[in-house]
Structures are given as C-alpha cells and as structure tokens.
Image 1: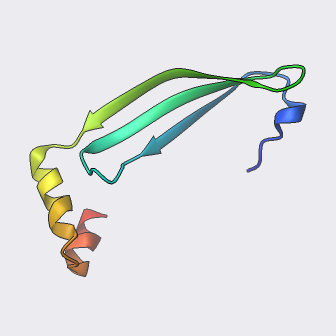
Image 2 (image 1 turned 90 degrees about the horizontal axis):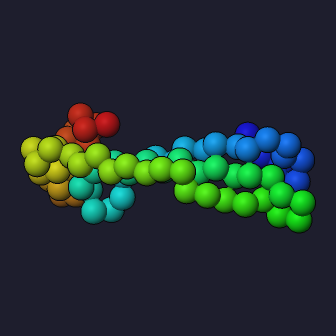
Image 3 (image 1 turned 30 degrees about the horizontal axis):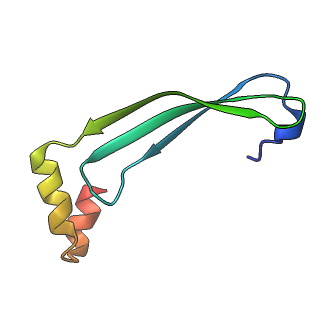
Amino acid sequence: MRISLLSMEETARIIGIMSGTSHDGVDAALAEIVPGRKKPGVRLAGHIHIPYAKSLRDEIHRAFEGDTAHICRLN
C-alpha cells in the first residue's frame, strides 16, 4: 500500500517493528506523519524495546551455525 503524502488530510500513524542484528529483542516505534502545506511533519510518538529471554537469544545465536531445521523451528 502506497501512501500519498501530498494528499494527506489527517495525521497518519505508522508502526514499525524489527528485530535487529544484535538479536537481543524486538523494537517497535510509532511515528505520526502530520500533513503540512509544503511538506508533512514527522514525529516519534513512542517506542519500546522488548528483550528476548536469554534462552531465546542463545537459540538465535546457535542458528547462525546454519542448521536449517533449527532455523525453521525458530521461525
């Protein structure tokens, strides 16, 4: 879905979620895009980091060894 920022009439709220290369947890951010006359404004409305349990971090780290079955179980 493509959002046309030029035709925005109301504030758009967008959530982004990712698990980075440090494999320490999940990060989420809420951004608000506010329409403007020349260009929209962007504001970080909130964010959170939810750490993985040590046991899950260890399992993810082991997946880097290339065991396909292990990676499938993690997915």
